[in-house]
Image (cartoon, rainbow, N blue to C red; front, top):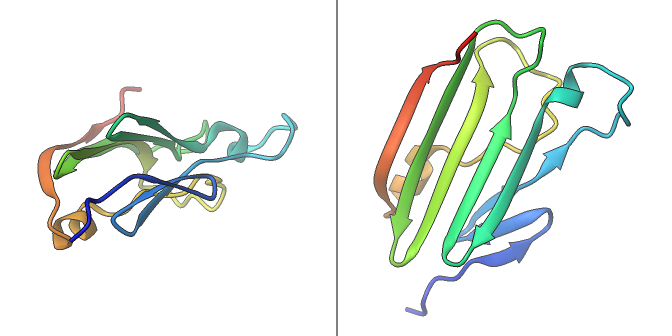
Length: 118
């Protein structure tokens, strides 16, 4: 089996069949909840770091969650500011669920979920 590698994908990177993408509002600063949301991903050696924000001033049931997974020498970190409120305005791309990584044999290094500070 060949070594797994991080590869470029449209708007981000992919590894082991998972795609992590960046996305941001295209409203040009005209206002609205989408202007507060985004996703971004960067590569640092054998590490991918995803950051997403799906909260806005109009959301109230906000929380933070994330995880770090590892397979071989590749590590993926996910940090998300999220809301339990409906979020049809989110312009980013959601990261893969932790269970999807585990199903493909990735080791969970850490995970968290806690209420967002007001």
